Length: 472
Ligand SMILES: Cc1cc2nc3c(=O)[nH]c(=O)nc-3n(C[C@H](O)[C@H](O)[C@H](O)COP(=O)(O)OP(=O)(O)OC[C@H]3O[C@@H](n4cnc5c(N)ncnc54)[C@H](O)[C@@H]3O)c2cc1C
Image 1 (tube, rainbow, N blue to C red):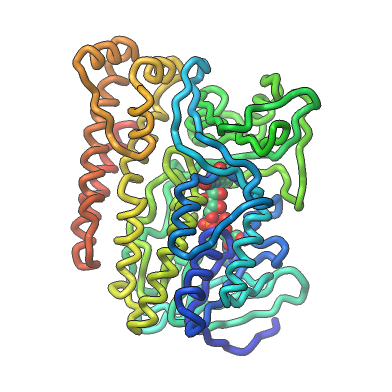
Image 2 (image 1 turned 60 degrees about the horizontal axis):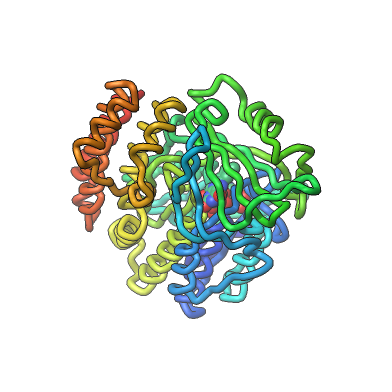
């Protein structure tokens, strides 16, 4: 074991994925050179943001409004080559493929490795110090405050070990984060995720056979409880003959492994005949996990913040986590700079990050989680019927935003009841909608101070817990 010396920085950001790069760049830009910020990643610079040994396992789609947010807040603009294709919408298809509803507006399909490198380049230009091949292993706590971290080098042997002291640690190390697990200070953030709130997902980037092409103007999501139990399949076009395809499932609802389900889909869809998997930038076919719950209700502790997948930011219905990772990264960075100006790194001093994130993005995610839990109880026939008779375009859009469409007039209700063919499914929908409203109200009143949080959290957990208990 080689032990290095103890270093000091104002802020250390762990994980140079989407959220970490964005947080670090924001600190450097808004800190105007007065703040020392170190960005650590276990990957070397050319592989920055790589999630696991297989690659940047992702569907690569991001909404335009999220990109615009970053541009507005820190002035970053993106283009070719990191934005591979622009789409005008994301459509959700019913299992029988007879109904297609728009779920999201315009957006981009990214070249994910290039986007990752672009984010790092921007962070470096802004003044961030990057250290690759460096894995954070544990946080250091003293007197109820996080004051630094310990880590080790990865890649070339022998490993060396390091310790860095800092005023603030931002944990953006993704779904596999272990840093908060053994936190030795009192915290209000949740430490573990329920396995039912995690979707195993698999994807491949591939070239279609010569003569086969896809529409490039929209991304497709296919609901099908047999092909992707409790989840969905996707096809996101990079060009007319290059696609990112994949699927996510709820493990509990599937007796077949993820790879077998992906193979089945490839074998049965004519578009994928003789498809050629791509491995550009060593971005291989692979699987990873994504959270489909609302964000951690508390994102801060004394000297510590969580961001991105480490904080369960992905949308509970679509599993889209790039957008919230970007905006959350900016917000975490802005809060960090404000904390440095005020010299206050306490839970209370960092609380504004919770408020900002819930206000901008997290106020509808608990309702979406409730809807996801209900949706997972329906079979293909019920989804076909519901989408044909219940979901108008505007209703689909409001649902995708976590808002509740009005189930009126009465005639429509009756039709829906008869069509769902099951009193349970119908009652379940009415119940879910009621709880979604309640959750939206609760999150509209997210506590402005840590003191109000425990009582609010009890109510939020109760409202969501009841939905889960009903549909489990
Ligand atoms: C198959 C799949 C498809 C998806 N499709 C989409 C999609 O189409 N659109 C969308 O918006 N979202 C999608 N998502 C979700 C999206 O990929 C994530 O939300 C997003 O990558 C989160 O970014 P992040 O920066 O929080 O974490 P990550 O991208 O996971 O980055 C974390 C970084 O931290 C590093 N790291 C981890 N631990 C340590 C440590 N201890 N020390 C140092 N470094 C560490 C990792 O190597 C990595 O570089 C998908 C997810 C999956 C799995």
